[in-house]
Image (tube, rainbow, N blue to C red; front, side):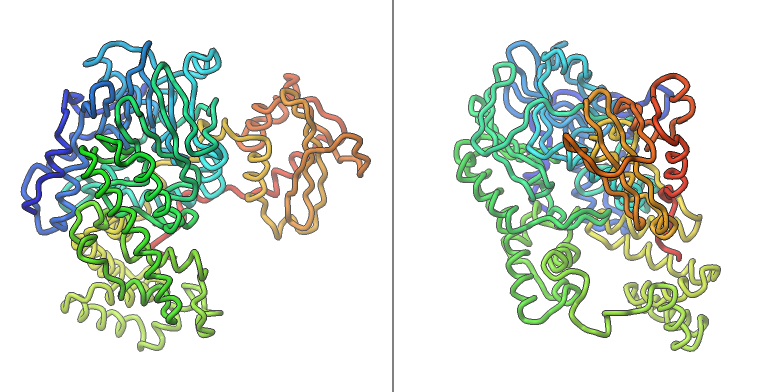
Length: 610
């Protein structure tokens, strides 16, 4: 705790803060409130892990900072940072936060101190919503179409940005509410941060598609006179991601591949398992390509690191962290251990354990090891006793019966609580709750045990999960505070993505015996896309020239925005036909037949109860 170098780096270059640190939407609703974290100025209370309190103090610093002359960052106005690089005519924005409102506030703060420069370029480092969702707060589609603001992103960005937030978006958003503590009060017994930043803003999410893809490492582009050399890093922290170097500033942007925390190999909100081996490989490549030439390294979260020697050591330790997790997990897998065992066995070497930026504030050693196990071995641990276990409610009922009933199980759990064995308490009481969801005593005991585990957690998402679980047990479900599969993102869907999103909503058993063939003539793209529903599966493809297959049940002639509105946006089909937005050939009733076979996502599904 005597090492205060991070505090010096986090405060370096401070120019000015937004006062008050609150951002509101057009309806005057608060979408961001950094001032709600003022309690972190006090000494650490017993209800927060001291290391997490320290990290939270760092990530809640808010304002405009000079990284080097010509490069500035706005921190503390969303989960992520916005970086601004001054060019010949204006300013190039890197990662425009989550929401239009917070992005606009960050840009206004920059302009207040640096002048009213136009945005002459936009760069997305990777395909997570906190790095593109506020695009409409810094520029407009019209500016982009006119060529006055090119939008750069790594190859594959659009597909991954949209698919992650739409296909499994409802479930991910529900769990993200737990992960970021969105429904928790700010304070020593509530949410203190997410470890990566404070939390997520709740404003308007949008997306302006890229106009220039970065397709290879070494690709060099000049935007408004600013030279940039890129390094593609697919499959690291995001499926599409890139680092890049500003040779004229000797500044290295590490996207989200090197932050001041152990990151997630498998995030608790849900995602595809990341590849820690390639993550470490790309960090080595970044060191060799740029590290020794850089005088500052900054990222899309946290604070910069200055000095080439410090940068190389920092990146090397981050590299060693992901490589060690990967290699040692594989070593123990090949000795016959399963993920839950390895998570208890594995210990980081001293140099990593003692580096603040390698500690598990966001990712954790425990759940990262389990993610690596899942990546290589899947969900099954090889023990046939686990091959066909009962689902949660059935399993819980049998466990409670085997323990002599709910009262006996709760007696054992209360004894464990008195002994401070909270991990065992939550496992025992979970059986009682899933066997008898109306058991109030079980819910209250479980909530108390969750709170104790949360208060002791160094990892912010673990704390938020525990305290969010306690909140729902005491007060009922808080649903999904923020949703990422919204109109702003859906508007960027390709025709193929629209039908992929539709396919995962088909109620398979209900559609087993249905056979529906529809042609969709997409006016603005001058092509015909066919959907076939059969055996509960919706398949789709472009009709090739000269196609001579079966005739469709109906054909709909419409533009892509109308297709989106009618299929996924709940638009009025009949009104669109009357207005001429849709022209119909064949039986128009088949669209209603198809829509009746779709299931809407449940945005309030239970997590801590059955």
